[in-house]
Every structure is written in C-alpha cells, then in structure tokens.
Image 1: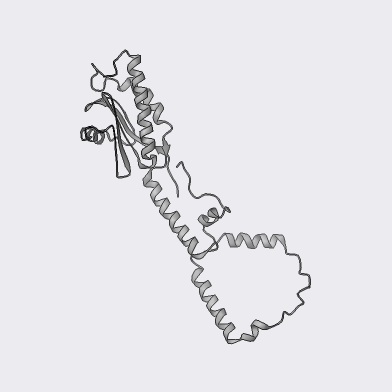
Image 2: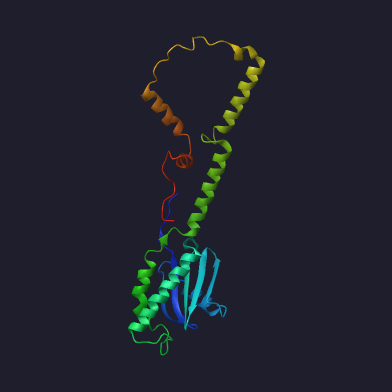
Amino acid sequence: MATTSLNLVYYASVAKGTMIVAEHINAVYDIASVALDFLEKLPPLHSRFTYTTSRRIFTSLMDGSFTYCAIVDEALGKANAFKFLERVRDEFKQLLRSRGCGLDGQGLEAHSLVAAFAPAYRHLVKPLVGVPQKEMDPMEEEVEEMLAEHNEYGDGYNSQDHTFLQRNNINEASDHSKNPARLSEPPSEPLTKKTAKPDKRGLRDQVSSILSTIPNGFLFSLGLGFPILHGCW
C-alpha cells in the first residue's frame, strides 16, 4: 500500500488573549478558522490543554501573557506536540528580546509579528514529517489481520489452499484407518542405503515456488522478505 509523507503540523499560532500576533498555516490544510474557534473556547487557568478529534490533536500552552496553540496530526502524538509548542515559546521570547519588546507583549497588534516569526516557524515544523494517521489506520488493520491469520494457521498459511489441505489430511487419515497394515509396512530399501545428493538448483526452484504462495506480510514477519510498509512513522 502506497503511503504519503506530509508535514504533520497543520496550524500553529501565538496569541495574547484571543488576539493572534503570529501564526503558521499549512498550505495543504488551511484550518485557521477552526484554530481561532479553538483559541476562543480554551478553558481558563489551564497552562496545558489538549484534546483529539478527527485524527487531529489540538494543543495549547499558556506561558505569561501568551498562549501558544497548535493543531497537528494524531500520528505526531501529544508529547511531540507539546515539545513543539515549547520550542515555539522559546523562539518567540528570543524574538521579543531581539526587538526590544517586553515579554508581556505590550504594544503588539494583531498579526504584527507574522512575517518576523515566519522563519522560526518554518524551521521548527520542517522535521515534523510523517504518514498521517488516516493513512496509517488501514495499514495497521491489514497488519493485524495478517498476524491473526499467521498465528492461527502457522508460517505456511495460504488462504486459498487451507480448505484443500484440511480435506486432504482428512482423506489421508480415513485411508489409514481403513488400511492399518500400510502403517507397519517395512521400507522397500535398507535404511542405511546412501541417498542421492539433492539437486541444489531443483531445490532452489522448489523453495522459490513455495515462497511465492506465501503472502509478503508473513515473509516479512519471518525475516524472509521486505517490508510492505513504507514511509516515515
């Protein structure tokens, strides 16, 4: 299954109260209006707040006069989302100091630091790339199904051949019960007789033929194949 690696930070902003003074908007997911609604409805007296909905994590970090918000993909995780906000806070304080502004944000106007803080945002979001959770969920379900089949039927499971193998084993058991003498028949040749050396090329072909019937997922779980999942995690 093909996967797509995208930046997992959809939106980020620095606000004083409900006034946004700096923000980052992912060009793929323009959800600034959703972020503003989130900012306006933040519960008071919460230095850290987070909730997850629709595979998106909404996080906020309050420090002094400012609130740092971010909307990230669920695949990034809450811990990494807060680490990102902490780095945004540290970079923003450096910006205020470099401009001779107080850390209380007095005199700042709405969106007055968007351009000045844009390079810092670009630098901070650049490494936060991965496979979105909405693409990971189907892959995880597929892997779980394959593992369940593998645990139930063993290493050589083949869903198309399973019914045939069961029927064949039942027929053989029935045949032995009708002809018990077959089980005690002596070998036609002495056990000490040397057997012919197997043809390596023929054996290799047989193994390749057998392996081709086994799903790739099982070969990977046994260390005999290549991963079927790609992308960043």
